[in-house]
Image 1 (cartoon, rainbow, N blue to C red):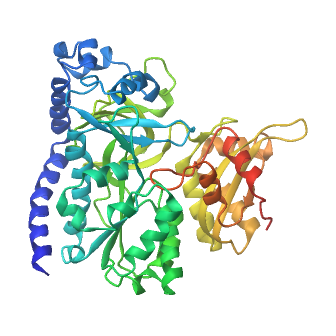
Image 2: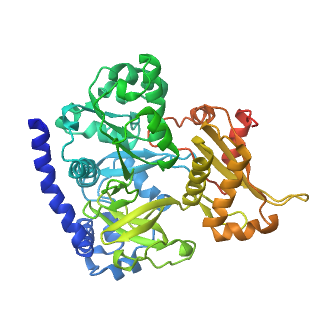
Image 3: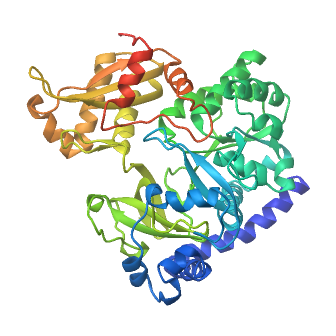
Length: 507
């Protein structure tokens, strides 16, 4: 092991002790953060509005502060964008993470404080390395570079002192010098706004680097990696970067991409480490090799509440704390953060897979599901069913989306799937049957609606040409960064817009 790897390993062992402490005392750590967050915001406009100075416990906090979403916080955030301070958070807010979300085209501007940068986002980044080193103590990643494919950076024209960009770009602009030294490419390329230009320049700038670590959203990284192989004429990434060890990924479920990465990186011991990192904060890291769930990170300046998904539409829903959650149930995640997001419904749904320590899986979005006929299909159901269908038929999926087919006078309803295959199934009709049967097996509501085709017919699956989703995202101005293909929708907005711009391929 080189000296530099030994030094980093020493620092990370110290951090492992702190991680072990919050695993051992999760409720105490969360209680401390709750008190700190309330105290820190007492004199903000929000804190005065809800009388934070008089709040003595969580019950009072829940009674006084309603559950929020972006629409309810938007008037405050717009004032912050215009330069006002001490609105939602006490310290100066100069950065905003721009997120388009996946439910509509409206941009969201999430405040990023100095505290959330240091104690949440950057701490999460360091903990990714910490947990990797803890599981692979003989790793040599610090001998090389980290390749990060992020978003673009823009200056907020409303206020010269405020800046916004994709979260990845905000993090790159604020990274300490030592971290900049270990990443490629240079910021002038990494922050290019034109995504296609960025892919080309990144490929040319990194093919001769000693890349040991990859980081980013799988969707966009695959495009970069394929371009690198085209330029170099190599068969796989190990021929370009022979010292590759780990890929840090997040933002989307990795299962549909796993086979593509096995082809790109044909190495049995390549380490894949999943993270749960959003514009609003860093929440989870896969801490054990061989598992797909993530350790809920409890000392990042985030206080968590959990709303049972069945209570989501109630007027005054009761939320749960860590000590009240149950295994296997779906919860909408609600966060209070050190950037001034108060009881914020982030839009993700999670499920606890372990309660000591607390580990979670992201199961979907509160607004990304299909429930046109009472079937309540969530993204987790879709991913599991597609994975089984792929496994049984040898298919590999690049991208997909699905939506309802509405009742007509002559037919029942159903689901329409648009799938872009990297490798088509050997037996297409069997693929459809497996998708359908697995959904029936894991979702009793779907199964009931499928009974004798009374409410739901067999799924209609359309294979679309390669490049379909890339071209569609490009037309919508949503290439790169945190932008994601919407997986499920309860309307036909996405499916119909895709079908208008491409001709589907019949198999």
